[in-house]
Amino acid sequence: MPAASTIAAVAATSVAATAVSGTALAAWGVFGERRRFRVRHETLPVLAPGHPDLRVLHISDLHTIPGQEAKKRFVHGLADLNPDLVLDTGDNLSHPDAVPYLLEIMEPLLAFPGLYVPGSNCYFAPMLKNPARYLWKSSTSGEDRSAARILPWRQMHRAFDEAGWVGMINRADRVRVGDHVIEVSGVDDPHLGFDRHPGFLAPGQPGSGLGNFADAGSAPAALRLGLTHAPYLRALNRFAEDRADLVVAGHTHGGQVCLPGGRALVSNCDIEPSRCKGVTSQGGVPVQISAGLGESRFAPIRLFCPPEAVLMTLTARA
Image (cartoon, rainbow, N blue to C red; front, side, top):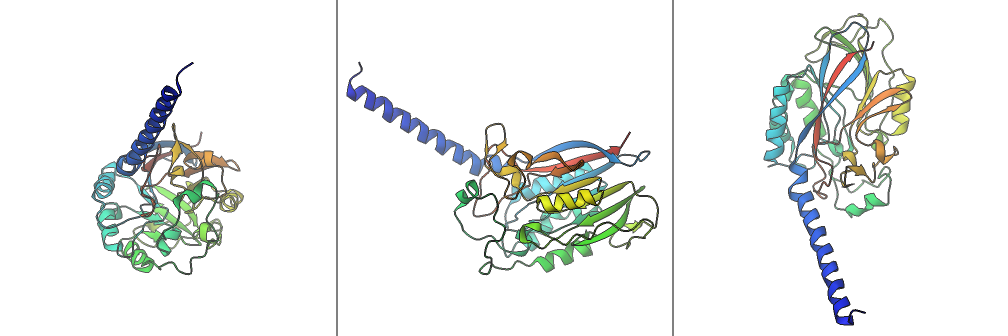
């Protein structure tokens, strides 16, 4: 039988190794993983038969802080993908002074047709909290934000609008992107309870022709697109009831801190953690959820969940 001193030494070594391993993981999450930006590619057969492919870039959850040069370089590089359409599903800010820097980051993408919806961190600055609360709370919806600083969201939205992007905030529209007519329905942030579903425009009802989109007239639509920041089930179900062809969302950060292999522990809303990034289905409708490009400045860590933009190639249904 080993001596007590030997057992104690082995135990101490094990504890020390575990501590070193945990420290290394935390350091990788803070300094490595959250800067390991990637583009995820998806091919989705959701267009009406006979329509050519449509390349759609989805960005979300930048949580911008001035000085994030690695993120800026990555987003600038996304313009080389030459998308037909850019979708921004919110949480663009994480600092009261971030709008000018955000617009520097977004400048090359603002040259493309774009649609956007806001998230909670477009409206309110994040507050310092225990980040581990996400491990025992399935959602932070309904939290008291009376002490939260209001972010300059109007300035941000005005800049997007002036660039020709169109805010789909509790509204429906028809837009033309090249040879494609898209019926769009978007909602304000469900995480804040701001969502009011507008449905889709009635058949034959013309679109607004806002922004850098040509007038869609009353031509048959190639796609019915639903946009939301947070993929709460009530929002996804309503889009499915309204017969959307595709729903696009962000908010979840893909779980942000995941187990090896990318298994999420939480979704920060009421969908199952296993569905909080990638393409799943709700009521037979494909739902594309981005893991996002950032994180709150008070929880600057990602683990087994790299930040991402998503390039969707939308193809015609058979």
